[in-house]
Figure 1 (tube, rainbow over the protein chains, first blue to last red):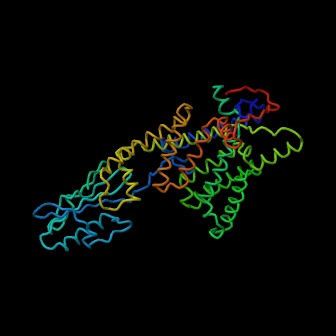
Figure 2 (figure 1 turned 90 degrees about the horizontal axis):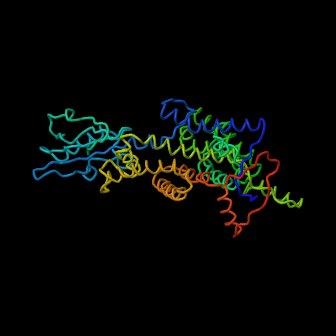
Figure 3 (figure 1 turned 90 degrees about the vertical axis):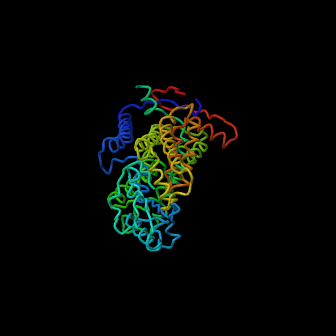
Length: 158
Length: 291
């Protein structure tokens, strides 16, 4: 018989029973642990699932600033305008940071400026839109809170 | 049912495929853990003990010396690393699924005859047979461990796919987050069509992982899928911090291959031509060819 041929050999006795038990236990764990955890929702440290990237990118935010002038809207880069020093890798950490930058932009552009912010942040359910850019954040009477909205999934702004 | 049991539990074949997995897995364990295991990093006697155990066990595993014991020792060390230091002491890096894949692969490798080929054990066995004037013992052993390694990979792909069947992932938004996390800023991405690319990438990932979970078991499409899977993992490896996870997945593709095919390929590779070595199995009660 060629050495590389695959054959079937059934040992007898306790060794066979032990092998069956080991194989069955491994099969049950390999398929059963992620099934219980991910489908059944059972949380136990020993039951491991295969959930790749489930926690990755959850601190990502996106902010777009638009300055509205008499001749139309233009995007404003707050870093280039010298009012923002972005955090890690050019990222605003929170919505509050982005609002502060908008207020600084208002101050830089002077009286009568119109600056709008569209802001969204990453969640496990998709983008959550915090600000849609419909409110002039430089207008003293408007807080922007009325316009702020929360949308889960399929967020389109900015 | 009997055929399935024969295939899963009672098959025996060439040990060369699992021997290659053994060598590759030892290298991947070093890649992931060796820097962490340097003795000056140990915070107490337990961690120093685990570090020493890690280096001793994996070195023997790599060489294939006292391989059965070395594989069990490596598996036990990995379990302690994961359960005691990771879960018990809350070292998050050792609880991660990247680490758990290495733990699971180490445990299942200990159920294989991975020292039967390309090992010090094999060298000694051949030398002893030669000294006695006998033919070398066959490079053959039980395949159930190899089958279980293949099942592990299928399970990873299948449940990874299941996890992605959400509106957030299928809309491409979660992929946007992952990419922006590593390459983006808070400014809108400068890449035109970024959202469309992420949408296609999300669906492509789900399709690829589903195909790999099922298709690697189908011999006719196995090899093109392995090439596609290797490219897929290669792309992830160079773009995202997946560490040795991608390489472990690709290494374990060997477990899906017919051991006879791997045996012939390595004979061809190392000897130039395929020369089957004749050797009948000894003291078997029931022997039947399945291939």
